[in-house]
Length: 356
Image (cartoon, rainbow, N blue to C red; front, side, top):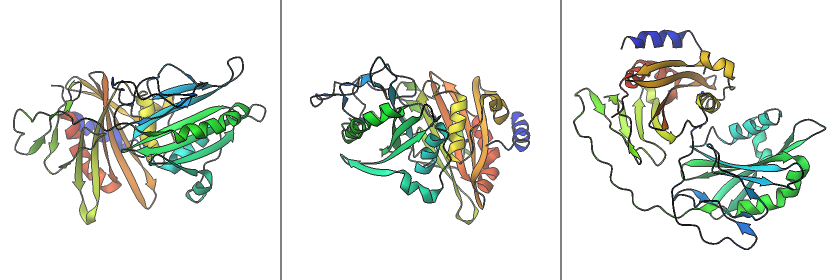
């Protein structure tokens, strides 16, 4: 507990502010039904609750990457080609405007305002899914780059289908890309999950004990302040706590865990920053934007961020904890004043983290 004053002091001296969550591993399931002639499906069958698709047969599937659900190389083998990257993250990842502006930033294009978003996206519906498609061009004048990006919300997560490459290659692939989007559909419904065992022992009188179990084995344990109200966790979460404040204010602590390092601490911090409309930090700025400590043998990286509207700021306290081949995220978000009042309780909560 002696670390808490130190952490509070560090946070007070710094005003640096925040998936990537890494995508859950695909499950071993039977192969999908045969794709239509001329089309090829994903390399492996999607897990229930995910999306599936049929890709043109001349798109070449590439080995999976840590942050992707799929990758395709597009274009002639002997010339410059384009790449389709498929990713998925929990929630709305900051919303359509933030996602479009992230793509525009990748092409060195100016950011859009909320009023301009409608003209930057084209709606597309298929198989019960509602998509928003962006068509962007940028890069150097002598070597222009084009990007086609689809934002597809599904089952509490957001899927991204981003085709990027030389402008001429992407222009030629655009009709096939749009037909590809029309093949997207939800995967089969999941079987009933096994029951999660109850806690072995009652929590302390003044705290709510929360043992958590992962599909692959035991997860982290913690004790939460008694005034935090546990809520249904949801499909993408390990746990959720609601925190009430004065004048109807409310904050929420979300607990998630994903296999691997989910792109690394810098990418995860910048994802949180994007959710608060804050600019990303660089590798050299990262050390000054976080606080590192060890809790019960667990390495913990803490972030304290404030962003959002000037007249209604939002604050985020986040902890990243690698454990058991996964990365756990503990993210407290809400009105700045309420989160400031809850910071000591959040730090106590982090200090209680332990492995089984």
